[in-house]
Image 1 (cartoon, one colour):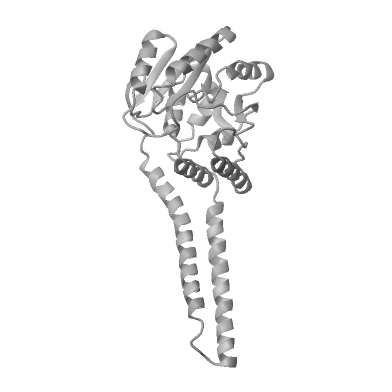
Image 2 (cartoon, helix red, strand yellow; image 1 turned 60 degrees about the horizontal axis):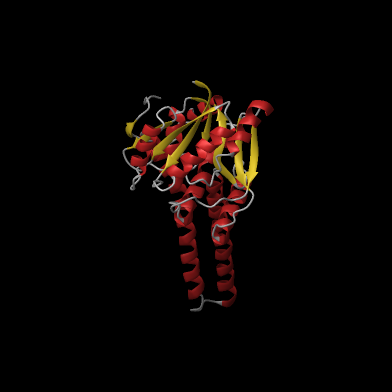
Amino acid sequence: MKTNTITIVVPCYNEAETLDLFMAEILRTQEKIPEVFLEVLMVNDGSKDQTLEVMKRLAKMYPDRVFYLSFTRNFGKEAGIIAGLDHAKGEWVALMDADLQDPPHLLVEMHRMITEEGYDTVATRRTTREGEPLIRSFFASMFYKINNRIADVQLEEGARDYRLMTQQVVQSVRQLPEQNRFSKGIFSWVGYNVGYIEYENVERSAGETSWSFGKLFDYALEGILSFSDAPLTLASYIGFFSFAFAVIYGIYIVVRTILFGTDSAGWPTLVVLIVGMGGLQLLCLGIVGKYIGKIYLESKNRPLYLIRESNVKVDK
């Protein structure tokens, strides 16, 4: 472990336009916190642009400060996070994005809170989502409300991955071996004494985000399924009430036939019932299937990432 050092882990996917700006901000932040050395560990997650070339150039410019890992392909941000944590050697470890939506200057206050106020982790959360599409902000807010209602692990609304942790916290996170990772939930699950810094939303410094609405929806679904079995319980309730409704409706049909005889009416009702029940069954099967799929992926026990090249010692 490197004492009196903050290792800043930066997962990168197509961030060639932002890395120079990011590094300039890190150097400015270093001037504000001279008592601690800031080193940067960039993780290239199979970028399709010149991200790796920029990383190598920065590593040559700052050989004692900038390090990089480069994956064999795109494994996703979660893999980039755990890869960075696996190789972070600083006494404290920060996690942030390269697009400067996570302001580096906050590290000064985050470090003070850990060293002076006794926090194990200092995380960040946005007080506003100004600049984001309204529909994305709405669904993000709904995700936190739903998750905190049905899951054992509670998430702070507006919380970012941006945080500063002690090595003890990092080692605890590394002990969780699951393939289907949801870092916000994992950071919450390990516990420890957590403090928060609030700040207003900051626009990207350059480039475009790689997070589409579909990817964010999948990520949210991953988070709910990773830390709650409530969807399985919901499927059970749906099945029970659907069966009860079918029994009651069947009794009604029998009684009506005895009292009034049969007729050709009711075909629309029959069609609606068949389609409705079929839809409910598919919904429940889909929920169960998601969990089975997770079990299948976990059982393979494949590595979370593969490193093609690096300028740091690759070990675990």
